[in-house]
Length: 101
Image (cartoon, helix red, strand yellow):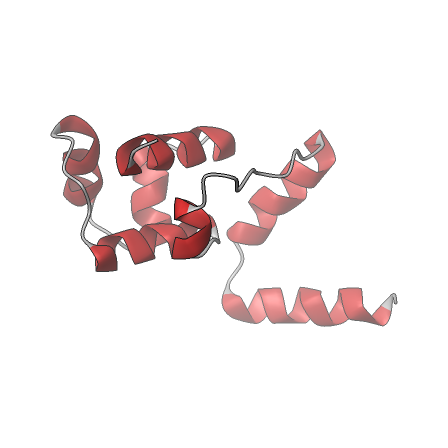
């Protein structure tokens, strides 16, 4: 699987549009569009930003045996909510969850 196919697969798993990837990665819409429309392979810094948006490492991105965990509808909803939180909100939620252990 090539880099662009892998990005497309990760976007499809998350039901993300180019715009959502742009927002989550902090990259311009034109950068994301060039990857898809012109089949431009992203630079390492661009790919790192994309991986950060997906919540994975570069190693996970290139690991062919890396498979996504299948999430239930409820888990997917929680995940989608989580990725839209600010870092401070994530810390608060993580602390709360740790209290239940």
